[in-house]
Length: 482
Image 1 (tube, rainbow, N blue to C red):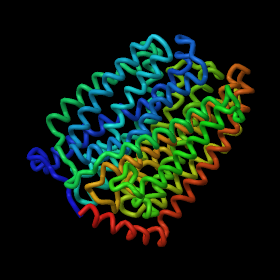
Image 2: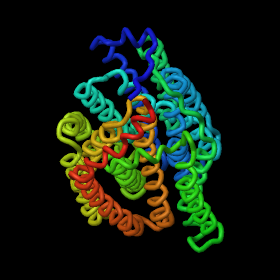
Image 3: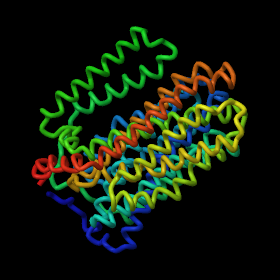
Image 4: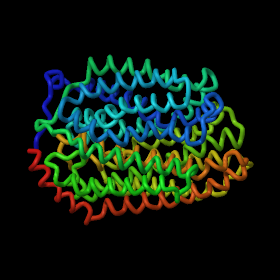
């Protein structure tokens, strides 16, 4: 198995203190990238009022970001493996900062959606690359599992705390501040990356795969566009049917073309390992549930219950607190004993929260609503560490960027689909009043319940003796990368 090539700076990055500084810089970058997945949700009602945005415009404000992340994360991860992870990391920080500034200056919803896409281009160079930097800095199995646990706990915390921070900013400074807050954080991360982050790359460079990248963008773009616009056009519309057909053809093209490509964008041989495949599917399923929850809940709290942005954000505090308490411990548990128990706990919490949400109406006591939010917090705190650890575990370190990118792609694709589906279901009913909105949301909560049960099933499958035995099927990949 090949090892990454490290610069002289990296050679000195062996002390615990320096490793901790590298981890801190990577965590700082992932906080702003992941927080921007959720922080904008609490600003959606303000965007509707100030920019005259439609429901589909609000969906695109969220999904333009997560869609670009999902489509280009694999390219960013493999490019970083090839040309240098610190180099790509710093370019990504700069692009993310510029995109955030443009979001805050957007004069209309169309400009904001475009700026969100720019912001996400920078984010693609941060999410998987930061994880690869962590994985290559902490080379021991035990210390790497602990470091990934810290890293993923920050990721989950950022996702959960985004609405809380966003609510305070929207109330105090307006919706534009949820984007401007990123700029000074990015500046600090840029300085930290220059001082502490070592350069690393794979010894064997992987060439670009433009056909695979184009097919991936085609599949995700057509699928998400069809779901979002189905509310206005109808599922039987020729446009929607055509988009779904193109997405299906693109997926077929990926499956047919990638195995024949010498150095494919999607290394499908990784999926011979059932634990790895289960981790990617779990990421998609789990974050689909969370994306749907966040999109529906932030509008329920403000538009149905009439809460201010800061009050709505505080109502999501029960989501954030369990992430702080659960993620790090779960990261250690997943590293030591595997993903089964964490994923069973996470999936059960998600299924139970979806089932209880079926009883939530416009006048449900707020204490009951907060209790449901607490279950969502347990879910998001428990689900991220085992996904990340399973994606990286047993894979060549030289492909850490690609493996991490696939896990992140699963998360962002799931979030994108969750927002698209939830918006398509509840969007047409928002103007009808609280009872109509919460009645329509029942379809979303049934979906969340099923997704939670799926996470439990995937956790049991991934930790079975048969699944563990399939890791040997990636041995040829190890030899290929040697």
